[in-house]
Length: 127
Image (cartoon, rainbow, N blue to C red; front, side, top):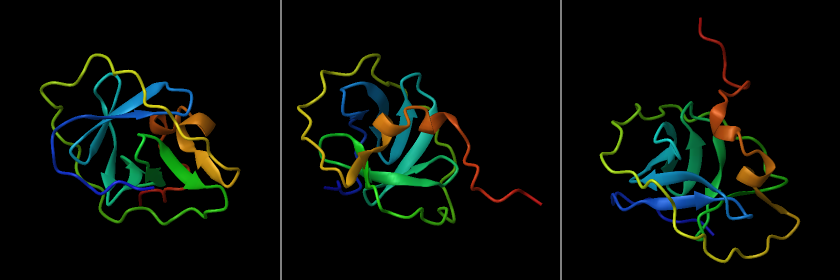
């Protein structure tokens, strides 16, 4: 279900179950369709830029998690925002055929398409 982390610079496109393009993975970093840094992938686990875990990257380019899964603690050391890649694709190719999900699995981007646009309310306040 999860992809191994890759250091290649070949872009991987992130879609929701309907086939809408939400992000592009370059190396271990996620960029939205406008090229802004929105998150990172570590060992197949997907985090928002503030370190909040949101799910796992599936082989077909979706971010999935189990419905019953509890929230995880924040990533202790989220990476610094990377430099914007020189060449991000302007458009994504057609999405792959998506496998049907069972009731216990949630497509994170289908459930909350704006997840990368918000800072988590669960993050502790700075002192």
